[in-house]
Length: 492
Image (cartoon, rainbow, N blue to C red; front, side, top):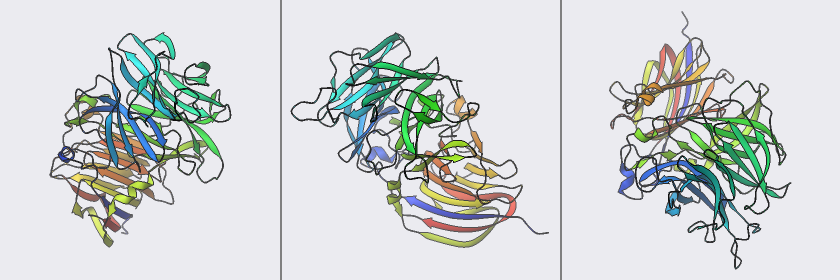
């Protein structure tokens, strides 16, 4: 009887350790090429803006503890979106008013009037949060490139006297010659759009929603113009929202007043199908030669406070470039890891024409690496890769050819009992159509974070796992059918 074959082609690349600025970055679960605060809690990325060759990352931060609370804007900068420099706290909580999520712009034309003596102001628009009382929109400005901030004396700039009204995303609309702000009515599942000539006075333009996933409160709107993949000039508008522990996106047109969704209203589209990706927003004011780029929070509100990391908690995703592509009449978001991360690759090991039955252990042990893999599954087979393997432990990602399902499974990945919701959320899947009978995987593993880009970024899965210290093996598996493999390994 002729055996069916699963053909694997694999590039495995170990990334150089970065961020090891001091002894803080040697902890067991500490990611090395994902941004994490030196100490204490962080959540949503805020104020992503590019200015004078520098990428700014502000983020929700608790300067007093390793759980959520005392929301303040932390701050870091980078020249390449991979290597980060920690900076002092940017905008602090004061007098019981927390600094919730928002965005920044460089007000190059000084529309706000905050610029003095030729200095160009950086302006932050954020939600001022008074617990269980009010959420309103405030602004602050900086004249020294985001190091020190002055809160506007006439705050708030927009207050509807609501308890839930938050997360402004702002950008300059070139055709309309005004600033646009997207804001969330979380309970009502509505994104509101406003305009302003000066960042201080805002007029309501339109609403979008409810639509798509309304199972949880809506948060963190992000409206960004992105290119259509494979074209030189065509662009679409991408609207992303977050709800409880998931994200979704819509693709269509924005005329400066109203957003129109062009995807089917009966389908939900997600930028990430794993459990640990949330509140992603895109950078403002990138150079024209740089693709739109976003960063998301790697954690999940259902167990965020309980992940076993200390003295820090939570990290940011690998920055992702954004475009869209028409697939079967749907606009699909295409995400790829920012190109600069390839600079971390080192060395190379090659294994040619390997044959495996059941499973094959690769000749390397690591918890920090990158894999590029092409699998040609046999009919009716289940095949894939297990990461962080050890005694009865592993994180599994695979393709079920019968069901045409790609899945990840962390039920055997080590410490899975840190919270009952973490225990329950152990398997995630999406139907994936093979391309020329193959599925392509691009995998990043970083101590406690795995990000998997499927079929050149048509789907992405992000998950946390907390494996045992010595569980660093990598193996290929199938359901017992024969496999032909070609393996390329790049390592330290």
